[in-house]
Length: 105
Image 1: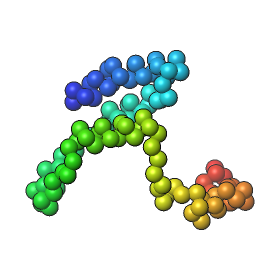
Image 2: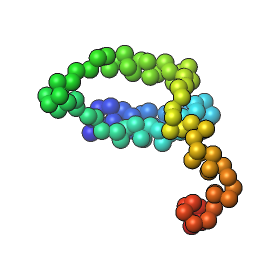
Image 3: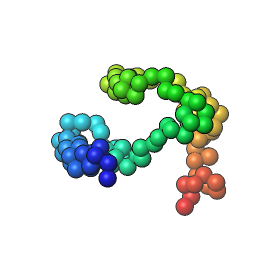
């Protein structure tokens, strides 16, 4: 087991669960389990076969991600855009049930 996984599984998970139950943090303990189960990936093959090199240090990227989470930063994402035709169609009550909707089971 990786050291980071051990820490997350043994310490962060129970601490977050306790804070969640006390309503101190808005993070469900399941997110810690999910993060602990993510495999570490190597960029060696991309570097060897494609000549790829990271353009930014991982620590800077992580710091930017955490700052964005703290600031509740948002950016428009076309697949989740409320004006998309299929999003509007799912608001139609006639399309929310029946064959093909997945809700008739």
